[in-house]
Length: 258
Image (cartoon, rainbow, N blue to C red; front, side):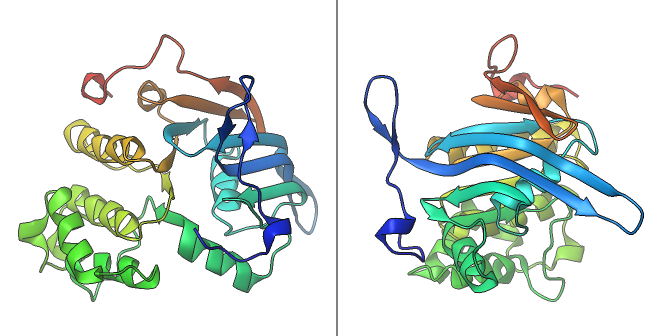
C-alpha cells in the first residue's frame, strides 16, 4: 500500500522467534497521552506498547474512562500522543502533519463509530459509496453494491438512515468501512446499542473481515465480546494489564450472550 513517506519512514515487518518476517500494521512504543486542563491534568494513557500484525480480531477491553477511546483515536490518527511513537503500516505518524495523517487515514484506516456517523441526507448506498470514493477505489459503484449485498442490505440500499433500524444503520456503517478496502478497521462499541441477535450478526461481519486479511480492532466494555477475539488487550487506568488470548479460550460468535 502506497502511503506517505520515503523508505526511511517505513518498515516491512519484524522477525518473530523463528526468524519469520511478519507484517506489522500497528506499532506503538511507550505511548502516553495527557490532557492538561485549567486546574489539573488527566493522564489517559501511560507507557502503552502494542504491536499488531496483519490479520486478526483484537478486542480492546475495559470500563469507561480506562483509555480505550483515546487508544483508538491514536491508532486512527485522530489524535497525537504526548509521549512515545505511533507507526501505522510502516509510516511514523507520531508528529506527522494533519495532511499526512489525513492521507494515512484515507489509505489505511476505516472507522465504525458507535454513533454510526451516517450522512442523513444520503441513502444507504450513497453512504457506502462515499467510503469507496474517498479511498479512491476502482469500480466504486460495483464495490458498493457488492458490499451492501454482503451485509444483507441490498434491498435497503435506497433507504435513508432515518428509515433504517439501529442494526441496519450499524451494518451500513460497517459496509462503508469495508468499501474503503483499507487494511485496518477500527470499531468503537459496535454492539453498544444493539440487542443480542443483531449484535451477534455485527460481530460475525467483523469476524469475517479479519478472516479476509484485515486487522480489526473492537473497543468494548463487554467482557462477553472479548471471548471471540484472537487477542484481548485489557486496559485499566490507562495501562495495559492483559495482552493475550481470551481467558478460558476463544469461542464462536454464535455462543455469545449478553
